[in-house]
Length: 388
Image (tube, rainbow, N blue to C red; front, side, top):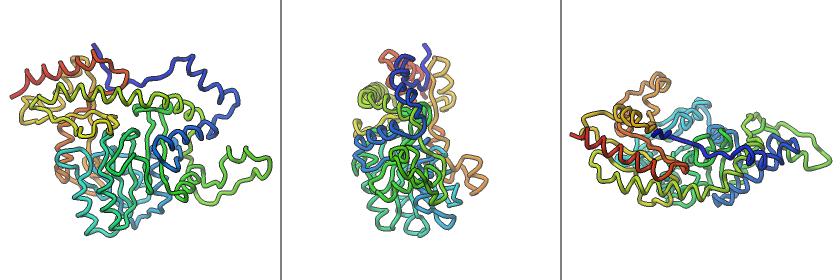
């Protein structure tokens, strides 16, 4: 049996022709009515006042920082245990990243360390919490902290489309949250795509303008009027808009979001039920299992209880046909950032430990029960064979 780490659910050729036909027949391929419909669907789902779709989550994060006028004189706070996109968007402005270690018993940034850093650093303008794997950060607590210091919260919700935090639905925010529709996310817009969600009208308008060259009127809006089709570039912008083909695919995928989320929850429960008794593993936090997006299911090896290390376990799983992954090698251990800021591997000990011990197991709606039980059985066999 071979089980890939991820397998997107894509429509068959006949379905593709059906839901793309409107865009193809009209010839409207760039940002237009389908993107608008997709934005409206997201607004309703996220309980948000405004959504601006983009061509990636990285672009969405970048646009928010640009709209907030972050500069080289500002600092931004971000977890080190994340994908590089969360940090590089601040680097584009030569703003300095302030890395935060992970919680001792979790994957998200340690909010105690956030507060300690804010007490001694008055240059932090933005904090970028990452809802790792779909497990929401305690946004209620984070907002309480940030409100005291006037810090803007830019949520990296690339993993968290379905997630609910202590503050409410992720995406329903007076600041901003950014989502990803990349190929391996819970829904995709055809391989690439993203969105910004906010309840701030002025912020949304600026982000939308910046996403298309700083033009005051989009092509679609200009086509809706018979007169005054001219436009004006009112500020320097970017080319980050989503196209209507992507919007059409997103609308089609969105029809299954609830069904697919329930399937992810079921798979997570199967893993938790069968693997929690293995002393050599620590399971992901699951106190509010239905409020977790379950984009990732990440187990941690207690290395002192094994005869083999994490990489060897992954190789053994691969030999049995089970593909896995690692999320993530921390930012402070990546060459670019190590060289620029002189980080050492042990500088953020919790994240360093996680980077050596986490394994991301397959979790996606197309994974059937037989495959899940096979993965569980292989892990139990490996524990029986290689435990100390």
